[in-house]
Image 1 (spheres, rainbow, N blue to C red):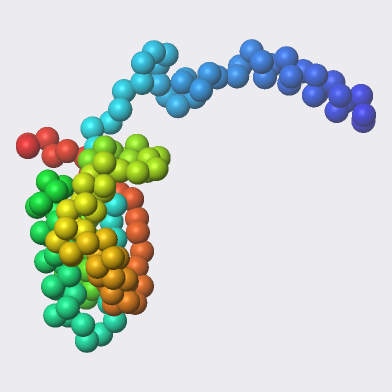
Image 2 (cartoon, one colour):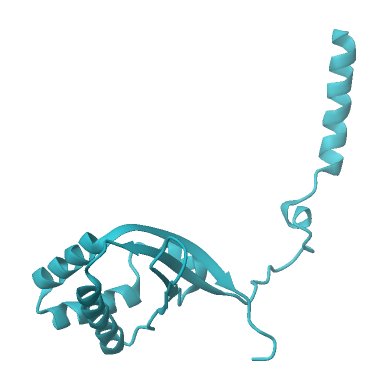
Length: 153
């Protein structure tokens, strides 16, 4: 029995080397330069707020929007939910694609934070507003998603 197992192992070692596909071919790609898909990437935040703070939440969102405009950063798409467990979905376009996930700092984020600090009246006040916002959030989930271009566009 031992001889049979060893013989089978030796045979498969020889075959394994001859038939091992290269990583490029294993992914059904031809050898050569890889081509990226045309996709737009988003960070999607799902937010559930504590009850009773709608007016102040709206005021903070207005400040965030002012910081978007002042910094030149794209405003997110905000969807207010009428059903389900979430109050809001916010789609932040990842300007630099999925590669943005690997950055320690983000140039757009830095520009936005500088504008927000100015609107808030300084870094200390901006941090207080961020903490206030966080106090209104009951729970939040963040996801990564992408969109394929529409051919008619």
